[in-house]
Image (cartoon, rainbow, N blue to C red):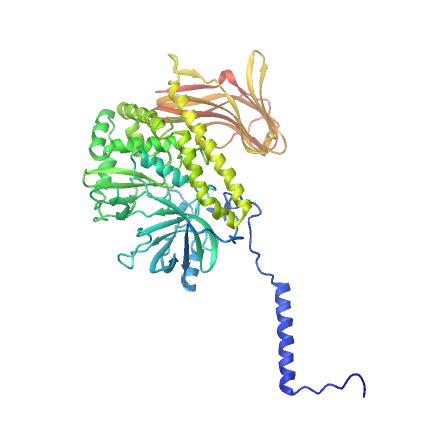
Length: 585
């Protein structure tokens, strides 16, 4: 007998089974090799996902790199809400297909706007199940994200089930905070508005799970509606208008709540009062239809917090409520996620900016409105914009969410602490800047009898491209001073800038410019901050007179004048002695 016995032949059934096993194994290995699973993205770069984007197909629909997936590496603390949302496959596909394109709804916008879809979902939190909850995406140009990324959304718990509420809220917004890496701007600023006497919804924090996938930390905001209004007003039957995306009160605003949603007579009265051409009469009419005391505080707080994307400066991110108990309109703040000098602002921004909102221009553009506004700025600097108190409160809020961020990634927690430090420093910078501006109030630029005024105090500014690509210096030649910009082949944008305060009126900014070696790679121009004009391509070594016209509507407005070069090489000279402002009749 040998060491090995002959194996018994397999039965036909076992031979078939073995063949199926081997075939399955081969298929699995082939699929794994040819179609590797999408990796779960962790926080290798904590700042990834904040900002960025580009235009697609010539339309102003912005593409962004996906926000990193959130996979906790440690147990999550229990002190924040854990909101688990279940969405049917069909409804999830509907949400996934939605893309915000509010640009199409704007005047001159490109592409059609798309209605926000609404679906019914199930929500679980703290052992409680909420059914038939209405969910729709939220967010606009900066904060909108696709539903397979980190979507912002609104949950209405009582729309389909009367009386259903989430910890006392009938409606909440889950804000993704993609424009605020601290997750704290909304919270601290809303508390500041409240302290100034301007109502604002409450803010908390939560982690969110959608169909079993963790989407990370969110900012939870109390929803707009009658429950919020009842905390601040005796009568909540009036219309609450939604300012939408860069829309004015003259536009067809949506109504969040109200007993007569088809009526806009209350807004029409405000528009008529704001359009009154005589300042004294306009002030009188505005006080009849507008809660002026609250409005002055509202505008002052937007300016103090550098809320450049609000109503006063950008006619965006606001609500307007008709308080029937007084018969007056009340403006309320919204979208406070880019404050204290981020985005298009700076902690040293002027406390006398140009007003973009119709009502802000109308009110602050009167002598009495301007006087009250500056007095309110000074008062709120003393009572609300208190550096030590605010930064202490900021860190108190940060300590509450830090353990949750650390559970997702220690790197994220460290990076978050650095962002909070930066936020606290910006608050301090803003407080000091406001005090300095109040101590040395701006005086309007003085013009001679011919209506001319020289612009001085020019300072250097690098605004784009490689920071080392441009060199700016003053050059003295032929008894003249030239403001020179030299650009390397790396390319970029650089400018000389000067700020002055102007009274209402029409002006022309003009001066002599020459270039060398710029060619068709770019151009030069004169403009004011916030304006975009085509750059000029000039012949080499030929002085050319350039000009830019502007209209100032407010009584006193700070305007920043810019002498700019954008190119991939070459240099430009601006004759400082020729840079002047002409007051036109």
